[in-house]
Image (cartoon, rainbow, N blue to C red; front, side, top):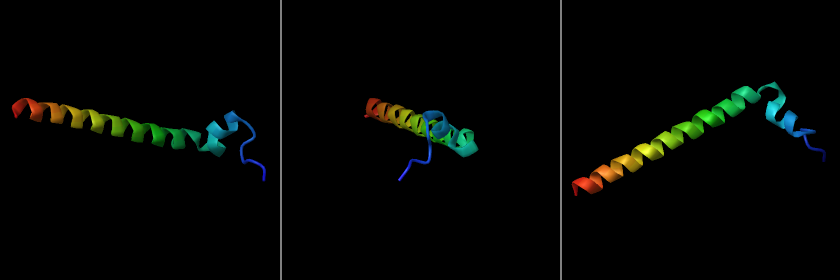
Length: 50
């Protein structure tokens, strides 16, 4: 069985859809990071109030 991509550049290009695929991963990672930071801040505020 041969791999679909012959090199890293082909892998990153994702058959012409690389911008959308990697953009979706990036937006998702950013949203998760923002959520984690917001939770951390909320937790610290609650601990300070307690």
